[in-house]
Length: 266
Image 1 (cartoon, rainbow, N blue to C red):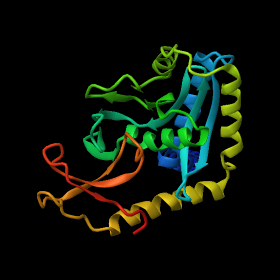
Image 2: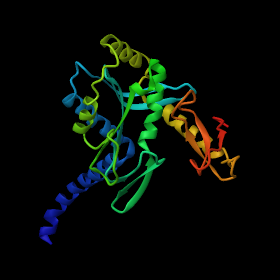
Image 3: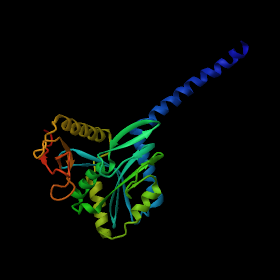
Image 4: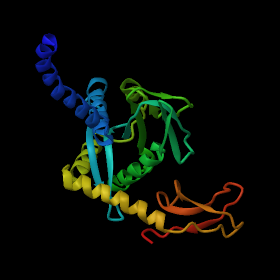
């Protein structure tokens, strides 16, 4: 009993410590904090692996879009060889995905989670930048980096990597000069001058915009294909004058080429 009485004050000191550990665990496991940490890790990697005289790095950029909303870009790297647009994913476990799939899959401790194909997610970013800078969309090069011990379980394209060194190597492999140094400086200034101030209001407005788009898509009923009568899927045009615009396409494409217009906000 005497020993227990002597140890009791020690246990009292341990309680706040355990509470702090639990709180920190919850904080660092939240999606927002994990995303912030991932962006900082990648930004540091750029400093270590890319020559600042050749590559200008702009982190955490929110730009207005043509439809009155916003798009949030983790990192933009301007250079004579192109504009590299980097999407960061801080995820653990096995990653399954394909370039053509709308959703990718994460499996971590037998828990399965689906998330938007980051290459498609990055398409809106590159399109917004190309329109802002008035340059060929092909000169805006999308890159996706997974950090947080992610393991790819399916073959990934060259522009999807899992560490900062591979990301820098992919960027440095582009050696065809597309812009002059003066053009790079001008584009860098244009991006900085058009990006919205990074504060709570900007972030909340972007979140609200994403929720509104999701709600609009949910409310709009899925039409039937005018050719074969099958269900249709919401798709995004990647070529031509309508590049970046959404439309309804038959679920049996390419066997069926039926399409219908998608009315934004309806």
